[in-house]
Image 1 (tube, rainbow, N blue to C red):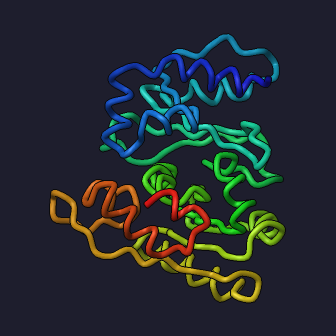
Image 2: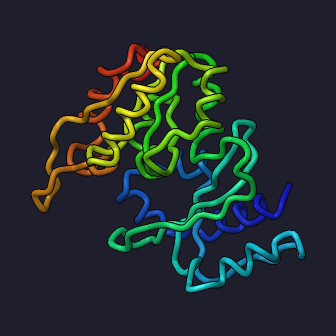
Image 3: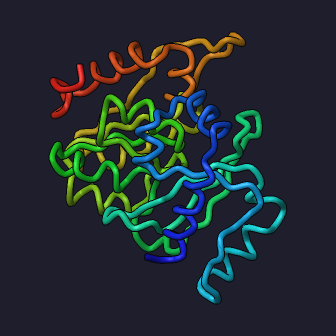
Length: 241
């Protein structure tokens, strides 16, 4: 156990009814809250060992970084927690903050939860944001988020060892589409690359949804899962329909 494990375990105990309701509203199920070890912090940290956690404690107490936030653990492929992402519980508060111990290896949201399905299916479904993972993972278990519209070289090397097929489900905006095109052009010889083009879906305010979490908000589980499964000749599809 490391101090990051202790932090995540503490944050899980602080996930109260208000935080759970906020997660339900963003498409996260109770099972996924447990699977991904999601927690909540509001200004209070557990007792963490010093000096190991000194840098983090100083970082976390700056400018309200842990004020009323979800704690999303970031893992390597072995399941070790190597970082955390903080997202405000209020969805209207945009942006996020991350603290990562070591960027020398692939460390992403949902990677350890997806690794068994990645290994069995030789496929990876990559999305951009952490909250995009939840609605997609319910249909496609080999899903994880890079937390940015970019596939770093260290991740490409990792994928070369495990998969033959990569589905890129980045956002339907200029940045997301450009990232998909760059990856396909650069690595089409390494993988069977599939770029996911999400159909138009409008939110309650009339705006077009740009990512899986927003499409889930517009469509709900059944319609989104039907679309996702239609894009995948998936190892798991017969059990999930």
